Image 1: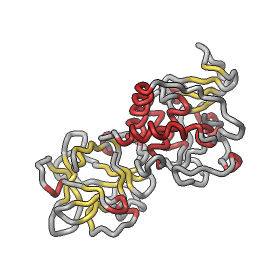
Image 2: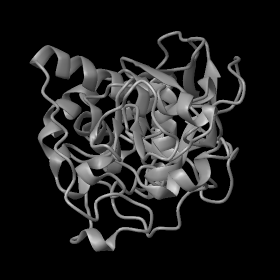
Image 3: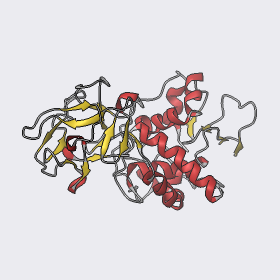
Image 4: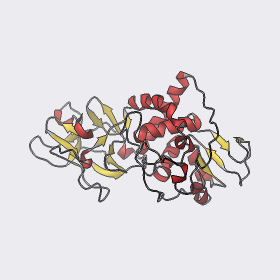
Length: 311
């Protein structure tokens, strides 16, 4: 359940700018609810969510939210913790990952057919809250992919802070972590998030020889979506990410998939992606400075600009 931060801006038909709250590492939480930033839920004991799903329904729900959250930029950077698994578990605790879920906090019941504009209402899979939101904001809250983007961009500080959900503050989400992790383990598509918070691997042009670049996560756009096929990373049109040379460091580019070892990217120490033909790691040296920086390959040296988290 989310609080007044969203409500204060939703009436204008838009989401708020990213909060100024101090970031916390995903998977950790403040020791006391009073440590939350203003405008968040959890200052009092939360309502019982009453989420009770069969094993099959829970798996299906977790799979939905894992796909939406991965497309939005939440990084698969921890086991039974980390950004993506935590985001999925929170959605399961809040709504059972039901994009149509609606809870009227003012009445303490599920939403009636017509909710008064003055009521505080939690909507959608991530239960985004608002009083008198604009139509666009309501449509987004009830859309799984759009709600995931709002959760990433506007409420979780790029997937690093979950204390705006009371189910997180009070550990209700924790019982959903195993199901969330199974769903995350089963993903084969989504963003490839950088170890530098808020940056994802992208491609401004889905064409042969186009370079890969660092982009801001959270757009859900097709040009930052990848499919893992074996040890290859494939674009929306089916091109493969490739090291350009066996002998020389340089930009990585898109090529037609041909089975070349230059198109293989293997998990390596320190969350690196290692190319066995080039014997170098995927590298994002300028990502902290600006989006659109060309991604290259360099000797592996275990720093955050070489950390990548595949779906």
